Length: 377
Image: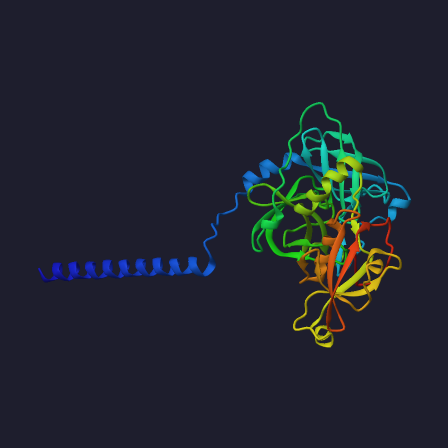
């Protein structure tokens, strides 16, 4: 009888401890939800993503003219980034990359540097069928190109998502043709947003997905299978992947698609000014409380900024009603302004605020002002 009582008491004790632990876990989970937010999480279903993605991803092969042989394909645009279109084994006058179908009648999105200087472009689908492609439009400043192939029936497409809602740490998947291997997939997370590689309109998505030469122009998608970026560049030593890759946000692409479809190119607003970031040291010298705004480093003679009274050394603190916190945002803001629109600009000059009025014009062809390290808008 004593043994039975002992066993019964031990059982009750163990149950009490288990209940207490469960309650403790519940309390911790509740605190964790408060600490880390209530954003729902889920395990990535890469199998389903692969089935949905691969049919709409294509290989883009470009036969280059001699002039096109100098097109980016390992040339650094700045800060260690490299475009990664890939030369094919059968000759230096051919290159290849990736692309994806966005309209069922054969409209394809890819990188502009993949087809730059091409005299002939061949698109290969997942079923190995090949088509010659025509260029609808391209924009070298964002490295985006639109191609068109003629097919007998509708093609599978990928839907575009919202890159503004993308979160750092979120799962992503990329599809491309690394080293000529068709429809290869890689996955990773978003490492950072708003990265800048030295181009005026760069605000790139950084990921740790394993992207290599030949993947340029391929889609970067979220767990819903929606495209949130177009793979563009990698940080590389010797052409291999180091776990740092970049993609153009799809929202930036969506902004320019209407012009590429109808006009074949993109017209942007231009103010004729080069700006640079405000460092803590500069902020102190200029009598600013904190390092914000955009320092005017150069002004184009006869350009909108000069005609509006802007001077070198001014700090742009407000543009078209928006406060300038990050100087890297300004070129994109200017580019989005309609041509001939009058824009209010507030600057700090010699510790005083001055209000100016600029009439934005169209961005000239080529680069009207070359100032290394400056952002031109």
